[in-house]
Every structure is written in C-alpha cells, then in structure tokens.
Amino acid sequence: MQLETRSAAECSLDELIALLQRGFEDYMVPLAFDEAGLSKIIVADDIDLGSSVVFVVDGFSAGVALIARRPPRCRLAAMGVVKRARGQGLGKRVMPHLLQAAADRGDTEFVLEVIASNTPALNLYEGAGFVRKRSLLGFEAPAVKGIDVGDTAGIPQPLDADWAVDFVQQHADPDLSWQLDPRNLSSLDDLSYFRVGEAVGWMAPSEHGALLGGLVVHRDHRRQGEGSRWLDWVRAGFGHDWKVRAIVPDRYEDFFLRNGFKRGPLFQYEMVLQS
Image (cartoon, rainbow, N blue to C red; front, side):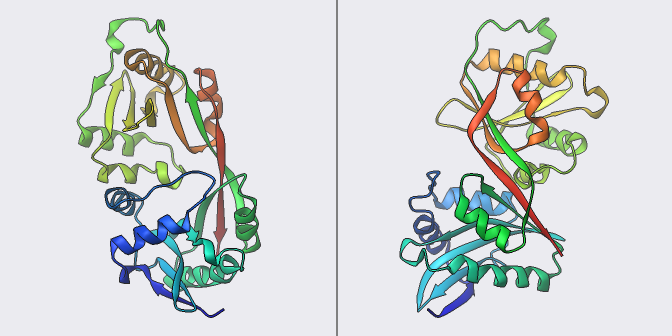
C-alpha cells in the first residue's frame, strides 16, 4: 500500500465535503457536511487548509485530516478514513506525518478531541503520544414551566452581537476547549445573545429544542447566582428542551447538575501532545 499526502488546499470545497462524508460514513455519531456548514467550521475553528492533508493510497483519496491553527497551538479538527481503506493501519501511518508537520510549522502543542467510547481512535492517539487532559461533557435538560425567577429586572435582554462578543472575550475563563474559545464567536452570525443581570449567554440554531452555546458571568459578579439566574429566566422564557454539546470542560459539571441539567449520553476526552 503506497501512501502519499497532498494539501487539502489543492481540493475544491465540494471535493472535501465528499471525502468527509465518505470518511465519516457509519460513524458512531451521525455527521453531515455541506458547503455552508463546512465553510462556517473552517472560519470559526481557524482550520488551515494549507496544513490539512488528504491521504492518497494507491492513487485514490482514502481520507482527510483537517488541521486548525492558533499558533503556537494546533488541533486535529477532524480525521476520517473511507470505508475501503479502514482496518489497514492508515491512521497509524498518517499520525507521524501530522506530528512532524506540526513541528516543522513551529507548533508546540497539538490538541484533539475523541469520543470516549471510540476505543480504536483513543488507542491510535495514545499510541502517537497524546495524553488525556480532561473530559469534555455535554448536558441536556427538559423544558420547564413555572420556575420562580424573582423580580422582572432579570427578563432576558436580546443583545447586539458585537457588544456580546466583546463582553465574552473580556470575561470568559481561560483554558476553555477549542470550540468554546471566544475567538470562535466573531465569525458566527447565526447566534442569539441574551443578557440577564451580569450574565451573557448565547443560543445556536437547532432542529430539536434549544442548543445552549455558552454562558459567561462578569468577573466581578461570580459566585453570586448570576449564571443560575440566567438559566432560570431563559429556560422559563423559551420553554424548549435544552442541549449543550460535549465540548464543556468537566470543571463546570457541578454548575449544570445544580441547575437541573443531566449529563448527555456521550462525552469526549481532550487530548494533548506537547513538544
């Protein structure tokens, strides 16, 4: 089996979409890729197509690795192998190329996320030298009615996106997961921001209920119930079932459990390799 790589920047967006669809066929979590969705991910997550690679095996495109960069850090944003090339150790052969390319770029930290139950992928990454840094959790909560939300001063106020993003960038905790990093927000134009008291949160479009994208409390008003009050008001006001993607660092688990959420069915490990 002859393995070569080529830059993903040489591919059209349609070619990358087709390869990602094939690479994640029968994945444990159903994924769908289209032009609008992939374009949004590329911009929001800082995916560098020049550093991303397509694997070519015996002349056919067998897989793809999307690399995001925020120097001196980089991230394996996605890696998929088409069905006919699976089970042949392709991932194990590709990883040294990705690691060497990161070193050549001067990236000193390589991060990725892997679903905890995806044992083959977990073994691959640990075999390449990655270590588990923390768990990234998802949460869900049913729609609620009649929450005691106190006085009317807390009614959710819709916010201008620029003001909200500036607030989040000023007051967000450090060391969030890549997909929760406030830098992602400035390129996303389909989020709805709301303020309750000294807390700002945002919601993303979802076909099923409401998808909570994030929640940030002003640094000077932490541990005063502001985050809980935001959740109470917004959950009471919108009346949807709620979901939070599995990108939340595990240090926030107690907050969500105290506020009526439960753990989602899947969680991820954030893994890191430092040079």
